[in-house]
Image 1 (tube, rainbow, N blue to C red):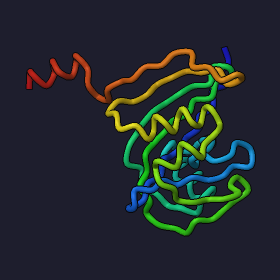
Image 2: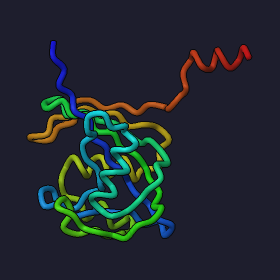
Image 3: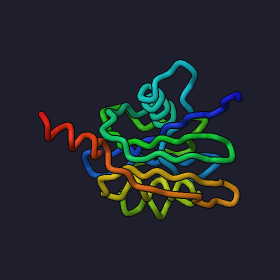
Image 4: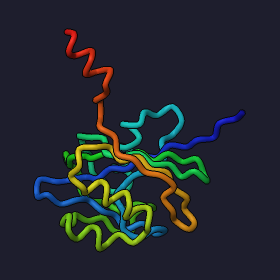
Length: 162
């Protein structure tokens, strides 16, 4: 069997004013920055590169928030939380506009169904990782779970013994 999975990354970038960074894509409207991981590239390097290319911003990755898969095209999307480190807002071929927006305003700006679903998860304050699988056309969540990071029965037993 030949495997043909693709991996994409995205980041919810926050600044010290509690605003988030959105860009207007020519294809999907307002969204958070992200894109495909290139062959030989680490996930973290891809995330930082995509954010810089699309917005001009440099970030520190501060957390992992979710993962989802398009089961029709075998694309796995990995979502992170990032903190603004520096740079000047800049547009690119993939961004018509780039701007900081209030968290409350962000959901009203994003109209693409999958992007809204992922953004809702990014903005929620839950301490679990969201994992869902979907079909894109028409958009349908096939299944969805929330997982606690790093906690398992095995680890609890292990920690009790040391």
